[in-house]
Image: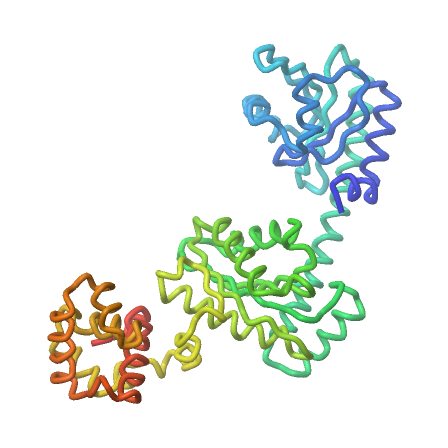
Length: 401
């Protein structure tokens, strides 16, 4: 639904058009951030900056600065804003739009000699608009709370609660289709970032075309986003995750993308994998703040272990011996690269920028110190898992050595 559609449903457009017809003047209404909410037809009194606002649904930043210089965001009664010829800005009459102490924006008229009785009429309409916008806010909050409650219950641990939420999802037609679904788990990692930052970012996402038909729920510094239907794919999840990380850059957020799922408990199942992916994004900086569970590889297995089980005593004994004698981790790094390269000596030497003879010397030392045979598949697998587990242990703050 566009701004115009919403305005028409709320009665805003009708109120503005009625005022414009009575005054014979164009009328515009901005929200508290300077974005155009609704405008009447033009009566030939507009300036280029009004035309720009109507076309772009936003105000020129220079106009916003001009408004700020006259402190209109603190006004509680109508006033006049002088012209600025350098900007091509005609003088305006500005009527604040408020209700129950909440500022919702401003009603503007081009001031080419507007009389006191016209300002009084415009102020009365601004009061009506405030009541309409307050009603919209209340209805939005109720709808948003209802959707958030269903999303929270869909991903919860109680099967009975999940079943009730699925019925609500269908009965109240909150989404076009509930199958399949992909979950995103969002986590703020900056201690100083307030959780309101997360709520605002998610509301922006829901109002955007990409977030259409998504449900979100926030608990403290963690949130879950559920995307349903044809858009419930890992690729869509990655795209939304990148948007959220960029929007929450100051809060250093990480986002995990779950595995798309179908069936009665799809939201819960996808959310479990999304939380695991978010943990990976937090613990493994090289992922860049976004991790899809499908891309985690061995880390998906290791992160299924509870954090309390990820301790140094779980590492293979051979790896622990190697760590004890390899203070600078040079041999461990060599071993990890060798195993990542599937035991291919040429690839390993190239990745490490060393000669193959140097690589063979290091591998020989690794086998001697660790007491392992790198030609044994099971021993190599155990070492590889151990090295990846150690990376998680280290980033969790445990002693990985």
